[in-house]
Image (cartoon, rainbow, N blue to C red):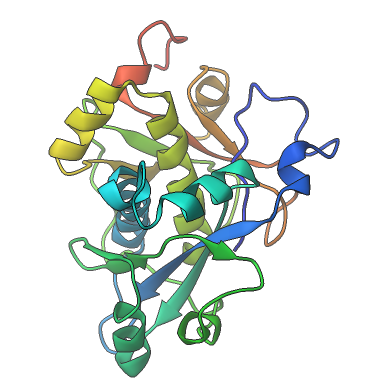
Length: 245
């Protein structure tokens, strides 16, 4: 579930090699806790993963001379990749012992780690499985709050929960990049409220053409290269954008 978020305004997706491809490649690991007897709800797992990405981006250890700053810079200089793996029991306890941040939702726990080289995963993360992250929602999600950020999923794509978690994380990151320092601080201080919802089919073309941050998938897993997966609809970014109704 390694993906690359590329804004829609960029040149055709991955059509030509760039300096980002030539740079050393890193990946941001995320681990979702999935116990056999009490798995998290799918939507909550997606939302918690997105908040986890925002939390590490905003963490002081990721900035300036912080202990994670070099890894974060190297990662962002290359293709922005994220991989979601699952853990339970002792696996989860070993993952929690590694440097990172655990974010807890209503039913989900996701731990995010500073980026690592593609071939340099810590052994306690490398041994975790990527497959087996299929999750369900016990009840349909309630309508999203129109005044809060919403990450809209493409209604035409079927993605596993792990894949969708990585894509939601990408969308949250693209929104973060476009916000001002004041807007970032306000979102952080509020606890990064957000919702992840599947867009209605009739609304999806308008969202992708709105100018809001749009994630295109690199096509490493599950879906075709260049597929539009998520639109990040943050209220602070709606001003001056195309009507989204």
